[in-house]
Image (cartoon, rainbow, N blue to C red; front, side, top):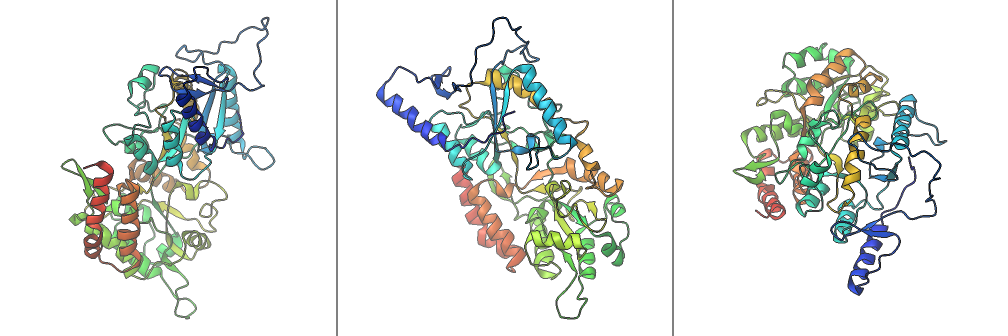
Length: 485
């Protein structure tokens, strides 16, 4: 594997170079550029490292399982280091699992005579980079790691390939193959009638989840709730119970007028709304609009108000400070995602007490537990990629290493789940119920929902009705502009 980082500011230079040659009508291509099937320039490596194989050396079988010879191809991935083995500063691998991943990827490279290269984005504005590349018909990398607020605008403007595109299907991509692709997250990328993204989960790559609740067992027991897991199984883990525990455990121990123990620490920033079966934004008669104004949505917003503002049981500091306080045993409930407990070094993972894990509480209108995430990050493929005949066959074999529906749950055995019951909570109630907060569907609506409705209800004392009346028309106008409704 190539472990170097390539800065993508070069993309802008390549756009100008491509435009210059088009304007001059120069028919001679430079050595570092070849033409794709549609005449679009693509960058290739013609550096001094290239060698001519010895005619006496036996030619290895470098064909993929689908019979395609991909020898010499440099398979590039930008923006996500989680699919590469993690190393310490001295170059050694973090643990045996990371070394095992390195060995498997190296074996794939050797067998197919390819390289797998990790690349970095040069700018935090990834949509701008993708847009600039699309204008010049330039491939940034074979796989791009993007957030939904970037990949949906790019998809809308035909910069990306939908997973059912005939070019991908022709080369053998089957995005519904669960042996290669993690389906629960991918289905949430559907927009404009297509799915756009690929996700993997295995013992090497943590499974994506929405929010769940980490709880202090001793504090919950002090409030009279000594078996939180059974509450979940009996579907009695509700907002009312949550608030009752939070109120009873918020205490001023030293008598200075300020609580030393808080009922709630870090929250899920509005993602709690889905626990009542509600979404901030959805489709009504085919049109995208604000949907948190439903009866269920108003009741969901009321929980945000009560938990964050009305009950005065939430410690009003940053999420990082809250996580440390939870780890120290002075917070009862701390909302988290998988990344917050993803191995030694994470604050919650290193808690001094045996915390428990349960799903979000169930709202009065819900029939099941949910796990909503504020963002969906995933791999996408550019429309400008003219190497699909090599990319897809390699992708199919690479995915068999990085995705494993049989072993991906083994990550839960590393200590993040203190008991088998915690593990069961994640497996039964959290992981399979992943949901994306559609309030973040596009940048314009996201800002109004986050900074307007969620912040207004949670921190500025707006009632649900006041927040909806203030921002509904603005959110709908942003959606009309994005979708051209």
